[in-house]
Image 1 (tube, rainbow, N blue to C red):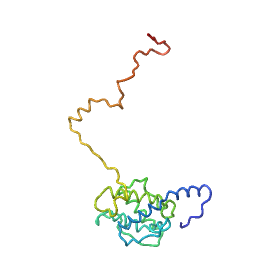
Image 2: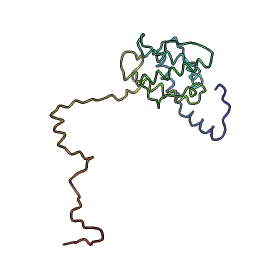
Image 3: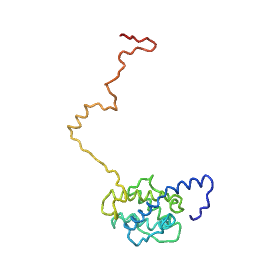
Image 4: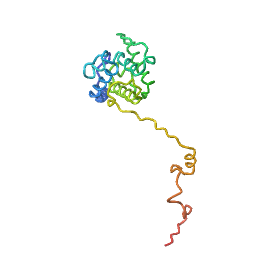
Length: 200
């Protein structure tokens, strides 16, 4: 946790809540996927949140991961540097996030650089990687490696084609959202203040 001091009171309660969202079992699955996707050259982190954070922190593993989901000529991150400079490491993480969004990960599923770099919200990092894996499995373009059951497939578009005849028939139907001419009506009602005739 680089330059972050201890937290107290309300801040500590919030940080504790965020840390409880981190799933060690999910960490194992994500590590297995990243190694299957990128190869053994990326190494293996120490088990646990600090090891997982240290493994991803410099952005090189993340950059290799996003590049592995593209063909050789279309890799989004052209230059991956192993460096000790904090600014360069954060820049690489930022490039991964931009490439992930372009790949199809929703903006709401993308973590902030400080979530990883200062270990503020490692559960958000897990969410981003899960979303990335789900899109890779759904695309099924031959670039995904690993067990397809590790991730859920995203819902796909179910486009339907209607003939001109079917479209013409649909014009004669009054949709329920437009109201209905069936059931209760106001027939027999009288104006305000007047008594209603009840005939038995």
